[in-house]
Every structure is written in C-alpha cells, then in structure tokens.
Image (cartoon, rainbow, N blue to C red; front, side, top):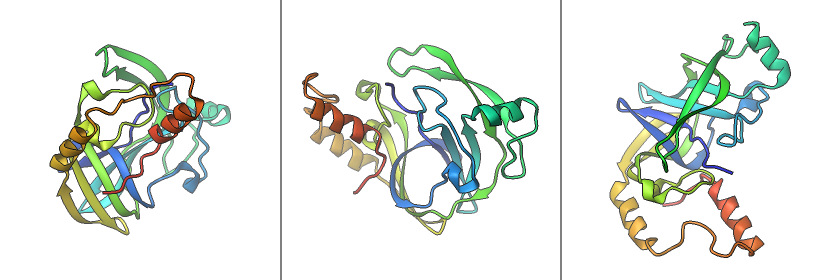
Length: 207
C-alpha cells in the first residue's frame, strides 16, 4: 500500500491539495455514468479531480481516470468514452516520492481537460500546501495537519461563502500530536492496523 494521490484545487492563483472534507456534493464518476478502475497503488479509487474557483463558484476543471478495458479501447481510437462533450486524452504521470525525492513515471491514464463543470458542493473544504516531509507515511491520504499552509473554504451550493486561514491551528495540532506515533506500533495487533488503515483513507474532518 502507498500514499494516495489527492484531489487538487486552484485557489487565488495557487495550487493546493484537498486535505479535508466536511460536506457533500463533490464530484464522483458515477454521477455521469463513468466506470473507473484503479490507476495504480497510489490511486486505488481510480480518479483524481482538479477543482478551481471561477467567479467564486466551484468547478471541476480536469478529471483524470483509470478506464475499464472496454472504455480504454474506445479511448485509444479517439472515440470516447464521451463525457462533458469531450473524449479523454492519454497521459503519462510522473510521481516524486516525498520521502526519497526520486521521480518515477508509474501509470498511464486518461483525462478530460479544460472543463468548467459546476460543482454544487455544500460544506467545508480544507485545502493545503507545503507538505512536511518528516510526517510522511506510506499509506492513505495525508491529513491537513501535515501541511504548513492550510485554508478552510466554506461553500453553499457551490459558491464560496468564506475563507479562513487555519495554518496556525494546524501547527498547534501538530504540537499536540508530537509524541503520537504516525503508524501502528504492534505489527501483530490486527485491530490496531485495521483502524489505522481505515482512518488513513478517510478525508472527513471536524474543527
């Protein structure tokens, strides 16, 4: 198992990862009838969303997916699958291991580019930048406290209502957790490992 690829969001001309969700309405492939498959061990769920704010409205700007065998055949012929009135284009992705710094090209996937698909999200999102390498764990989605810069964006029906800098709050939280192990300490404790894995793949938060 490995760390998972986060969704991303463009906010105030800067790229952030989506590190926390407290609401409903983000994009899921099944909403448009698109079946996806795992792209790699770093993306078990089979898709990555890139969001942006357009006139303070949340949009899906790019969707990267792992296609099923049937859809892959269509994509390789430039015929589909058609979604958002577009056919996907192929990509080779490079990944920089945050622990070793080594860059690897490790999957070939497909993306729907230059989208402006409205996302009627309601609730909060934690967006983050400047990951702290010492807190890297080879599992799941990294939570917001592992980043130096964190903002909370509040939406109502996809429109931005407020934005709050939570960086100082996350720094305080890191201090509270300074002595807490980042991974299970007993390799024979199956329940501890199960709970840790389950938590690692959650992105929900409460402040």
